[in-house]
Each structure stands twice: as structure tokens, then as C-alpha cells.
Amino acid sequence: MAYVSVFEVLRAGPGPSSAHTVGPLVAAQRFVHDLSADGVAAATARVEVELYGGLACAGRDAGAAQAIVAGLAGKSQSAFDAAALAACHAQVDADGAIALGGRHRIGFVPGRDIAFRVDRSPGIGGNALRFVARDAHGGPLASRWYLSIGDGEVIAETERGIARQGPRVPFPFASADELLAVTQAQGKKIAVLALANEAGQKSPGEVRAALTYLGAVMRASVERGLASDTLLPGAITRRAGAQADALHAAGGTPVQWCTVFATAVGEENACGGRVVAAPTSGAAGPVAALLVHWRESTPMATDEGVVDFLLTAGTIGGLLRASGLRQAGCQSAVGVAAAMAAAGYAAVQGASNRQVLDLTIAGEYPLALQIFNHHAFISKSAGAPVDWQPHEPVTATVQTTALAKNSPHPHAAMLFLDFVLSERGQKVFQQSNYLPSHPKVPAKQVDLKPGGGRFKRAYYINPDAQYDKGNEWVEYFNNVFLK
Image (cartoon, rainbow, N blue to C red; front, side, top):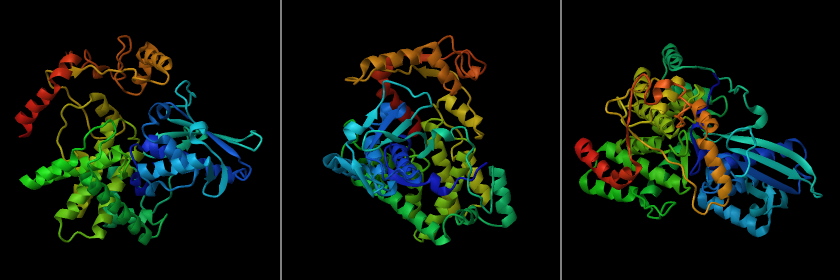
């Protein structure tokens, strides 16, 4: 199993999406690099970009076009947020030109040269991008396909199916047991071994400086999230600031403060603010929240403690990613983030290596109520120590899909919806370990659907009733179980 650096797991950059914002930026940077490596950058007069799949559908709202412009211009993701991306995009749009990699100037108009192709599929997977470089006469110089596969990682079409080759490190491990064995054999903490492994790519001083910087970005994202009162996308009101004021007045518990800190980071990410993906932009809250709580509640907290926290958290995140636990749904990403945060916090609290791993496996909580059972199944299939069990009576809601109002391509959208609901489309869900809704398509694991081995039936809630009484039910649950 290839080694995953902590800096692949912890990455500063703009929200809201690792796959739909950061991925396009990285792909654009890589294309410019490929042009230079192929010796055709100087002859390039125009670049065209096409986005497909999930990027075509969701990329506009995630700032994919602005990210591509920044990537082509050679900008660093770590220094950008949505406002900086927008400013870069506006400048290029006004000039009608861009300097590829900050050096070679070509004509470029984002509205003309970046296309969101919701009308076709390239057949190579979701979140695909195609870049074409042309000479002064319009002739093609280079064409490349890239895939944004999540967690900010981008691969070329030619790299699909090729096993990832990580760097050689002095203390390799392929499982939690092996990691524990190495720490015991060396008599060292996880953070010490992680620093030695990272020192193969950077000097120890550079590693510490980079992690201290990431810790500062995390703290800044919490502070901005608590201080800002701007509306979130969709004209949604922020909650973190008001919640923090209420906790100041009432004297909140550590768990309540961590929850508010995580909410602040999540809201910053939603509006495109600069956060530290840990392991994704959407799951940036837990690690940042617990790190900030530790610093504020520990009088003798130091930057060295921040380094130990993030080295340990990043090692656990890298271990889980290397095992194949990626893109298994939003709950999976938050689960990995919670494991990373628990490991980092345990490390700075003086826990042993065994305790760090036990806390990670346990995830601090003995069980999770009201989860998607197929998410637990996906995580278990990837090697995570988790399973699901129905508790009667099992209730279920009907998930909906709809055509967006004022869709630019409504007929293409209707054809896509027809495909999604068809037997063939539902088999795609089946092969991805999600629950197909078509009566002729069983779940990949039969007992995931009602009627299987673990539970015989489910009580479905009418969507209208859920809409009318949902808030009332949530309030009742909170009063009975959480107060």
C-alpha cells in the first residue's frame, strides 16, 4: 500500500469542494505543466476547456470556472479563497487574455473558452475535464483528459487503473496494526515517525513550518466563520456566530464549543472561504474545531503541539485513504475527519499509540443513530471497523430527484432523469454499493434493502408529512434525547 503524505490529506485552499473547485484548479495547473514539458507552451495561442459529468452539473456553483482560470495562470490554491478566484477571473475576462503559468500570454475569454458540457458524456468517468491547446492558426497542439477523483487529487485519463506509487519512507506501514508495531519497535510516538517519513520530501524545519501554517489557516477559518454575518449561498443565514454568542452567555461545554467551531468552518467553506481540507473541504470542520479548542483550553499550548496534532491526524487520514476509503459519501468523509481529530487530540493529551488508534477506531462515539446503512457497508468493505444493525421499527424516507427550475438544458436534464430511474441507470447505483430504487434491481448486498436478511420491512414516511412536520419531529427528538 502506497504511503500517503500528511500534506495530501491536509491542504489549504478555497471552498466549497475538493472535487469541483480545487480539482479543476489542479487540472489546469497540470495542463500548463504538460504543455511546457512537451515543448509546445510557447506556440500555444489559445486554450479551450470542457467540463463533463458532475463538474458540468455542479461546477458553476462551486466556482470551477474561476478555479480553472487561476490554475491556468499558475496561481497557488493555498493562497486563494472565492473572492480571490473571482478577482482573478474578472481580470482575465476584462483583458481577454491570460498568462499561462504566469509567463506566456495568450488570448482567453472564460465565457467563450470554458464550456460546461451537460449535453454529453465522455465515457471515462465522472468529474472529467478536457483541455485543448491550439496554435495561432487554430490547429491543435495538445489535448489532455483529466479526472478530478476527490480529495483534491487529479489524474490523467492514461493513469486510470494504475496503482498509485507513493514515496519510499523509512517507516512504512500498511495497516493500523503495522503502524502500532513500528511505533513499539522504535519506541516513538506516531508524530515522531510521521515527521521522519515526511522529512524525505521536506526538511524537518519545512515540515514544521508548513504544519504551523496549516494550523493558523484552520484558526483563521474558525474566527472568520464566527465573525461573519454574510448570507451563505441560497440566501441561508449563518448560525455559528449566534450560537457562539449564546454559549458565551450560558457557559458552553467543550463539546458544544467544538460543534460551533466546526459549524463556523463549514459555513466558511460553503461560501468559498479558505479552509484546510481534512480530508476534504466539505469535512474541514472537525479537525480545525478540535485543534482550536485544544489551543484555547490549554494554557501551555505551543506550535510544537500543533505540529504533533496535525502529524498524528494526517497519518491516520493517510492510512484510511491508502486503504481505499475515499468518495464513499459525505458521512464517510466526516467519519474520517472525526477519526483524524480524535487521533490528533489524543496525541497532544499524552495518549499512548495504542490509545490513539483505539480512539480512532472507536470514533469517540459507540454508535451512530439514523445513518445510511449503505454508507456503513461501503466503509466496512473498505476495511473500516464498522457495521450496521437495524433497530425496529425501521423508518425510511423517500429520496427525491428533480429538474432544477430555469435549467439551461431542461430536455437533456429530463433524459438524464429518465436514465437515472431506469433499470440500467439503477444498476450504476447498485455497482457503487448504493441502494437502487428500481424494483427489478436488488442491492449489491441483499439485506441493505427492506425484505432482505437483516430487516424484513420498513415504515416509509410520506414526503408531504415529512415536509409539514419535520421541524416538529426534530424539536421533539432534541427535547427528549439531547436536553
